Image (tube, rainbow, N blue to C red; front, side, top):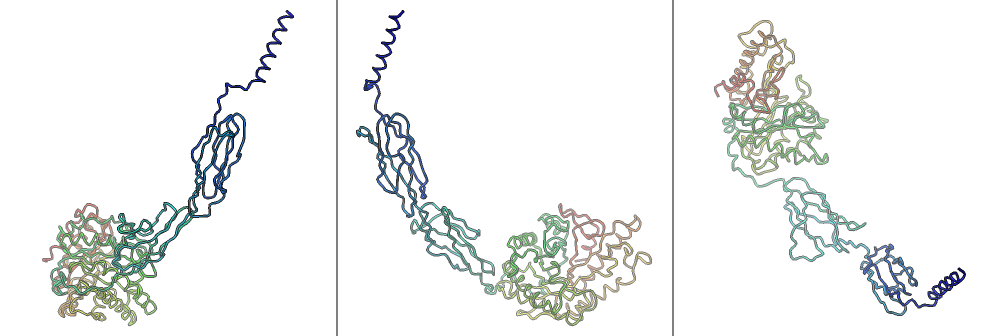
Length: 568
């Protein structure tokens, strides 16, 4: 047993002494570097790589701005090396080489270190003035790398093709400015934390173009003979509370071509399109109308044009800024806005032929009593501003037939007070009045007066505003205007339906309503006045709609036949 223990001790000693004395020829020298290249930011943030080696080693940098830690060592294992650099304040990429080698230089490796440059963004010219017709602009850009471009207006577009310019130039196309307003936009270049903005200013289109009589040959008298019986697209494009607006605000659907087709099929050849503009102004300093709204009005006008119909667009109630202010204290302000709006409308629709007419206002009034001389003077100034604004745009608008209104579109006030505006062309202006007599039968929202005409007396009727009154009113228009070569439009007339009446009264109401519509239409036509029915859209109680605005279906066929039975 003692001998065995001695043998084991001797064996252990030999093993230990053998390891201690050996050069360990079995270990294979190695050095492995984990990366071939390191990229550092311009700020010199740390990046890392690893060395696996069993030899003594060192690392040196070819550039003083680039350093490593640790830079030397020895032993067995994997070592983490940190590479850092001072901030690169130049606009050039910096490069360094790390030499990694063993003490005996049996292993020598190199690693590339690249440090990104400071961002560079230089714009040669930061402001450009462009003519109204548009064109290309070339922006010279100095940059240290890829940059982003942001354009804030859709009328400025980066060109897809750059011809005969250097790589440091960018071409942008500015589209034509067809409006009467100057406009501006910006192009912003950015790289990293740097950005530069270029301002683009474009001139307005010339307000006036050469007079063009093509397609507008008919004077007011000739054109009036072509316009037969009209229909109002009421409570639709003029729907506004004065601040906000929407075609559907007052409960009617968006107008479709199907509806206008149905109106034409029913026999109407003229459409009056009451319009609001105030709530669609995008710049109060210039009164610029939103392009999208002008385009929408154009769509509806085009529905009429496609049907060979005559269309009339106006400035309707529009929140009352114009209609309710015929006073000296508002005269200058309102005329400024009236001019700016009509110049825009006129330019936008300038190329339309004589089928399109403009009507300057609607029912301008300061209450419903006899107007003062102030009221009349100011109201007439609004008519004159309208005519002057349209004519100032030239083209077909030099000859376009225009429509001006009497105070509150009242027939008696037309006869007593209306003076035709001064116009640079002869016989190109018509007059507009409205007729809702007797008011208690036509518009009052109660059922106390629901009968009209010679066949009805007593309860449910009213003594004034009967046939003889209507004859006299329209004869006044003929004697004072039509016979003097001034055409007249009856821009609105109707009778609200009173479907809430009892059965017997409702039956007589329908007879009265249809008789009234037929009689008034005939009286107007007989006296050379163009009748245009007021359709409010809704077809039920206390409404004057004739058509289903969604489908175009004739809801009140009897009323339509009464109007069309006038013999026109």
